[in-house]
Length: 270
Image (cartoon, rainbow, N blue to C red; front, side):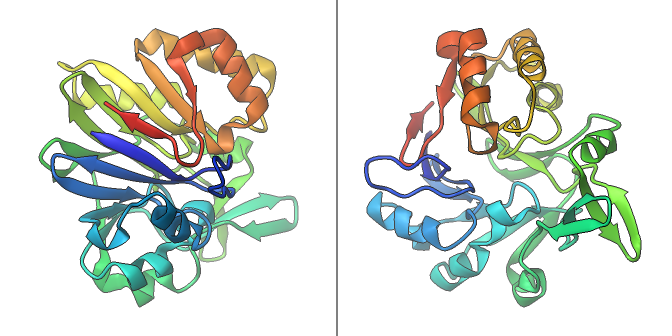
């Protein structure tokens, strides 16, 4: 399989970056798009990278935040065939909230209704195609993470700490092992590796690709996470976006050559 980073925070070789993530994946003759970044930039970058969005067979939303979904309208204008796969818990209701201050950070208002005929809501371990699955969080108590990160979901007039039930991993079976894409890993990168491997107990964990949501974390927190990642036995982590440069450098210290920096235009082959 071959995966190309279409959008990441870090621009590369004249190809622009933004706060967001989009990855184009080619696997067994099919083309899969993971997320659409925070704007229409993903379409511009795809053209520069020689990637055809019209040929995408499946599109997947990793979770219900704007920096992964705000390009969806552009995608639907360009691609007329692919269904977009979302976790069953995806709604337009995600906020950052501190005291009386709130900021909407979710899917663009109206997108889910406007394009409902192109959306597929999935639950449980969902087989996207042969060798490819969508895996939900299985770790209990993730609402404590939402509370810590000041991330909430609005349910009517009630505010609930986000439990990230709208977040999912896109998982590929390769001859070398399981490759996991989870764009922000809000549930914890080490937890996500364990969650996915519970579904594939006979397989080896080869790589986790995505942001680790560490840009606001302490050095101790990052080093502890690195230890947790090592304990899973996974071979590689490719990380960027919401990981942050300082946290990436700490991960690199701890994980050495097993940690690789994501950036726009990076090509990964497994």
